[in-house]
Amino acid sequence: MSVDQFIARLRETGVNCNIANPYNCFVENIDQTAEACCQRNLQLSAYLKHRLESARFILIAEAPGFQGARFTGVAMTSERLLSNAQGFVTERDILGQEGLFSRTSHANACRNQAERQLGFTEPTASIVWRAIMEGHRADEVVLWNTFPFHPYRGDYPLTNRKPTLEEINYHAGILADLRGLFRANCRVVAIGNVARDHLNHLNVDATHIRHPANGGAPDFRRDIEKLFIRAECQRKIRK
Image (cartoon, rainbow, N blue to C red):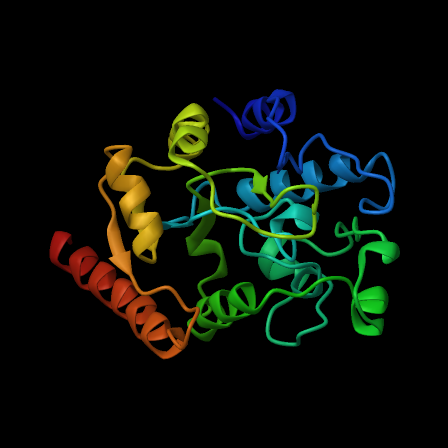
């Protein structure tokens, strides 16, 4: 399967209520235009293609959030990260090129002036990308989720909820296809206990690291550094 075929599968996948598929959905006053999903597909395509030959780790969290992949198409990545607004990562670092990013969230969906001007930001995404950029490893890591779409609560699309096991099982083939895009020795890493448990349920062998939320940022940064140190040691031993 190619990246284009993978994204076509995402785009063509139907979802139940209380789930938004960022790759085909349009919600008035939430998405900026009816073509917003096409922009997110474009951004995900560039993100994945930029890492096809260089990725060493696939870091997997639980599910997309409304402040992140819901509007960028890229897991654990917010609009403000892609717009270079946070200073420590650039669009080129994430997508492999400049001038591709375009905001897809509607200003009416925003809760404050900063969001209306700059788009959404997600604390976890910022911590993850800062840790990746500390080692200049942007193209060595692929970010993804055990559940590929955005689950939300009730009739409130700008909320997050945990996906059910039934939902994860139903869409498990998408995770398998994502892994198939990358080299066989690209190691899967679960971010947090919930992602670890979901991957165990899906019989996916994964290294486990601390989730950065709830005071876990220092441990998360330490665990990321250890991953790369061990990988480099193993590479030298193989030589």
